[in-house]
Length: 210
Image 1: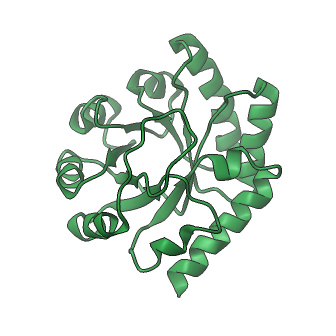
Image 2: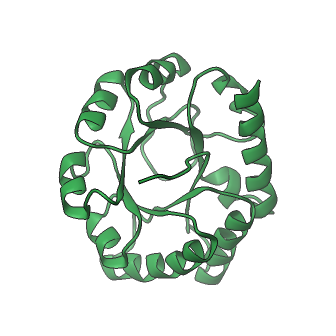
């Protein structure tokens, strides 16, 4: 499945009303994000499905693929475009088998070995990081830019950097050959998510052109 991972926006509903959360997602879409992942670590299955369906209405309006974090069942139930699995989640090949070849399966990789394994199992893209420490509620292990570059060279699928990235610090990724960046706080916690997304996207595209 063809998709653009230039600006991969990962949601975080922590501390937000549902209305404010959905408003921020819509603003991010207006700002030009190219791929969206809904990530809800604390919600029940029913709550996760309910919120995913509401986000799906927005992403369909803008023609942006929606990826569900961790939960293959939620992705299937909501007909999302794909799922993202971490090292402790369902193996890539199983997720691919359940979802089908026309869906996107992404994987987290922190080493070249993990990257090759995910690719061989059928992953469509990799999220590599954390490049910088993050403020999100996930365990982070820092990944060097050198390792990121090695992963890009090791696999022929899309590779995105993730972890504490914003428009002012992505210069460290110059020359890495990545396809895009994944951001959470830089957009989700911005006073103006639309503007933040637009500036981030432009900063990354400029970085790739240099």
